[in-house]
Length: 117
Image 1 (cartoon, helix red, strand yellow):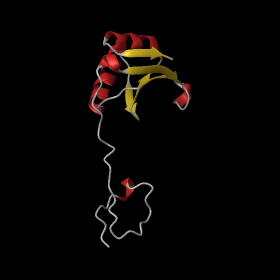
Image 2: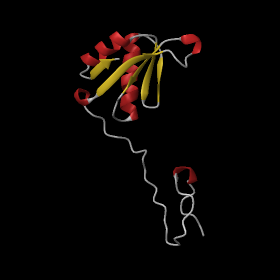
Image 3: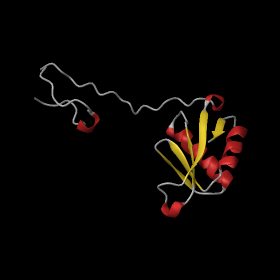
């Protein structure tokens, strides 16, 4: 029997089927969501020191709903305004240092609903 899809990593929880007519349906869960307007976004801004080199501080922003490009643009804006480095990982913006108050001000000025935790 020839497999229609060789993407076996995407087939979670299916090991074997005895049905000869079975066709595995690959759901494309990687489709990006449409970006919500800033007034409907609820972002959480908090500080994290665990799992960092030498206990360094990092400010994390999560809760963004939208495309990866819009998330990158928002991260770039925050990094520029705070004049620090940062990155994006697991749909979360990571900013080096403790800039919670400044980031909440920046996001509020752009129309986002941001809360400091």
